[in-house]
Amino acid sequence: MNERAARAEMADSVNIAVIGCGHWGKNLVRNFASLHALRWICDADEGLLRAQSELYPDARLTSKFEDVLADEEVRAIVIATPAASHYAMAGAAISRGKDVFVEKPLALKYREGKELVERAERAGVVLMVGHILEYHPAVVLLKDLVRQGELGRVRYIYSNRLNLGKVRQEENILWSFAPHDISVISSLVGAEPAEVSASGGSYLQSGILDVTVTNLLFEEGIRAHIFVSWLHPYKEQKLVVIGERKMAVFDDTAREGKLKLYDKGIEWRAGLPVPRQTAETTLFFEETEPLNLECLHFLSCVRERKRPLTDGENALRVLKVLEASQLSLERGQAPVKLAEIENGVAG
Image 1 (cartoon, one colour):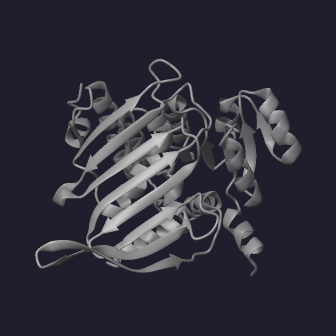
Image 2 (cartoon, rainbow, N blue to C red; image 1 turned 180 degrees about the vertical axis):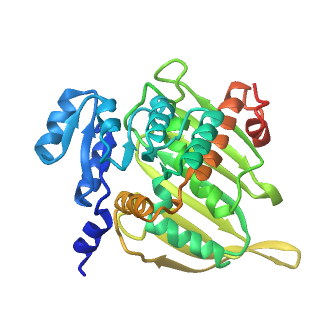
């Protein structure tokens, strides 16, 4: 069976409705259409719907979310609307027994996200969150290297996600850019941080942060930081993992050699630290679009009734870090323990 036939079989009987076909939603529409699963496109903007209708004439169009929920042949809802609407829309879909793929973040409050996860469990529906980096072939390979001990014990991780790009008005840079890196870093460490602190600044719009730096402290002293900005002269998406034996760099903006392994470190000689620099290795992987892999994974979970890689629990771990980081910003960069968020004692 060729790849196209296999993907068609995978999507067989899985009718998908994509809610929101704007900046990012149009990419989800494109991918689910290519996987022969697209049934509905829903958006309040009639102009966006008309543009999509020319590209996907077989898809049904509506500006009313209720039309999609009422269609009993729709098995799953894909939500790519502004973050503030995720909680209500995901909840409505779960109430109708629909499987749900919601773009990050799952909600704007940990307690709301926890409620959605519990409701999805009780209803027996699939709940998946769009932490797309988890599906990137380079990240999958990097996680394998860490698990196999190729880098030795992880000591420090840092991530830069920078651009002079689309400036949001409904959410700040922390909630817009950082979820991807929080998810991947927690996955690489194999745990969530115990404590976070964050700093940032608003320069374009009062009260909406354009730049933030979030510091994460894990058990056993592992640390990480995430630098995000949409007010930056060039695009950079880089993740660096420092191990006790080797170091790895994932540069998603590089045209070639996106993932490199450095056999570098510090050795102690006669009581003095001496840099060790030997081989640099470029690691190769199949360059498949991560979003396509993510969409394919969702269809597989819907058909086989299995738990997604980026399930509700994954989303809650990210939400805790986001909410704790936001609280740290509001407290003037003071450290916040994640237990405060989980136990509902933050305020």
